[in-house]
Length: 200
Image (cartoon, rainbow, N blue to C red; front, side, top):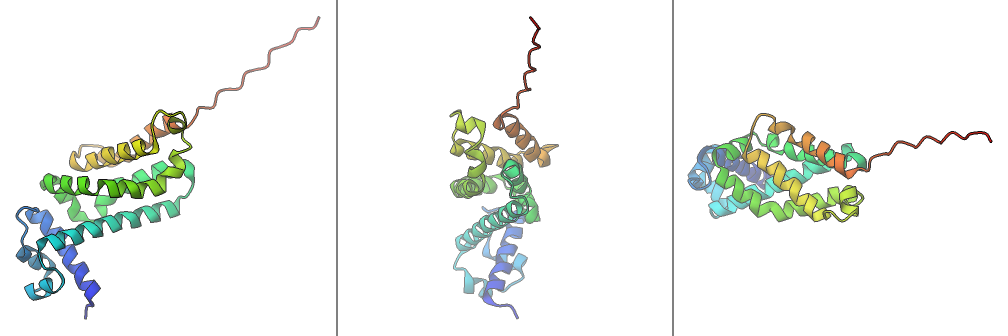
């Protein structure tokens, strides 16, 4: 027998599938019931309307993103790879919810609304993971950009790969990380060879 938390999870997962199938504008409580395989009575026991279900979907996706980032950074905590690790976690996020890919592909307006609404919160979350690495990088220490600038750039580029998928989009994180590392880490200049001294 499921407890209340399990039932809510079932409903939210069903709502994600229903979103991918019907889109936010056409989504109904009946669609959610069908995909979640729960009765209307069960659905209304936990959610009063469609908007409450959609808010629960948003919260689940945000929490899942934080968990993914936590796990990725815990597995590779070194600061010199922090940007690469976080970007890889971000680019792989839609794979956590297979139906998210369908939402990005067939319901871009729904996806864009979600990404825009959650942007500030996601950037704030990214700040906690990336600031220690970004604030010692060359572009930031030299004043070319701020940490906040870099976080926004990363967010916009990675999320654009969800909305505009092309061949190679799944490696956007690697290319972006390589680009950042090429400008963020000071080059080691070759040591000057000592001049030969001539005997007098």
